[in-house]
Image (cartoon, rainbow, N blue to C red; front, side):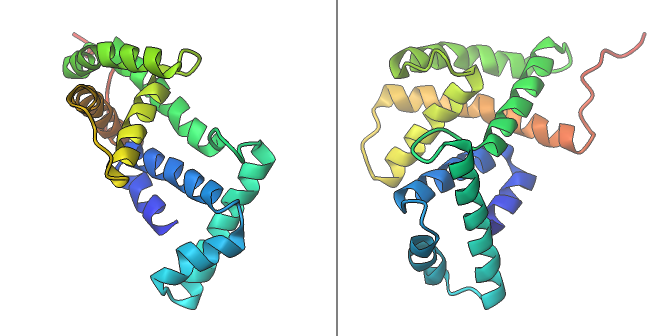
Length: 185
């Protein structure tokens, strides 16, 4: 909860990846708040107030996962909503002549996105979700200290650059600093 709050403000892409990891963490603990308390919260040795807040947050997420039917796989609607907002911004950025570097980063990453989509059978998923799937896969492989081949690393590097740029524009948009409208002459 504390990490997610900070990430939400600073970097929406990292926030989303973190939240996907939290979903997996809850699944790995059988959506059991008792296991989460013992394995996840207690080791941090937080104050009683912070522990209670964190447990409540995890408990709320567990309840949402059950209600939304994502106990075994899939993502919470709150995380899907982030993807929806990012997809909307992505479309606006691509249409705007004010951010040509964004379009360039996207088109540079696009062949890798398509390749990942084809290899992962992600045809039914939105394009940005495929990007986050690729980044999450590599992140998990790194955490597991698994070998990542050079092609995968090159692909996710380009996807990461593109998503980082989208994340920066998202923050600007949230702060009301992003102007994509053409200037009047």
